[in-house]
Length: 256
Image (tube, rainbow, N blue to C red):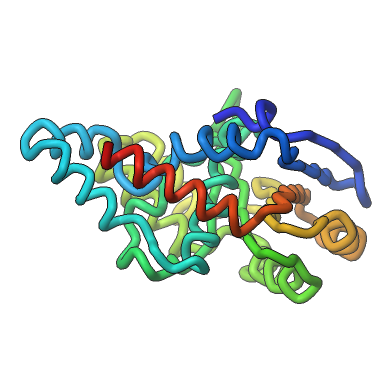
């Protein structure tokens, strides 16, 4: 899923920090829905798992398996899709990668996951230590100052560092899926070497129906901490319609 195929990008520097504003153009609404719908299933279940069920139990059962993982409540869909878009943005548009798709481990499809929303990882390179991108995601029809302040509080908690629980969760999932080397890198940084603010950047990622510019600019202007900040505001004027259309396309595709 390439953001540049359906978004207009504007980049600004605010108080030494990066502010990226993305706009879904109305004429690309259907294109955007289709592109996003294509990647949504992989965030809830691995393609390999879906393929195994498809081969052993058939199309109807594999569709039922995925359908049971997709949230139905609009609020949960909104939050999940915001996290999916943030994850894709990190992988496509930053130097970090998200090593796991966290939504695959949801306790229940109608519940939000706890802890840091998304963490990007930049493995050690040329003697430099591992680096982390601690991210908070907010998806709202109408973004507000209170919502951005809530995200800022979450980013600043724990001295601005990724929470130990979130890092342990990622390392455990990586170990379980055979990615022991990266799991050990994360565990060593957390448990042996320690993580400094120099190893961390923040990302505040919003998806909203209204313009996010002023809210994100104000947040960056008021930040006086030691951690490099990145703010991304994706504006989708048809916010609710966009979320509904994406999930409807996912369900239709896997029922056909």
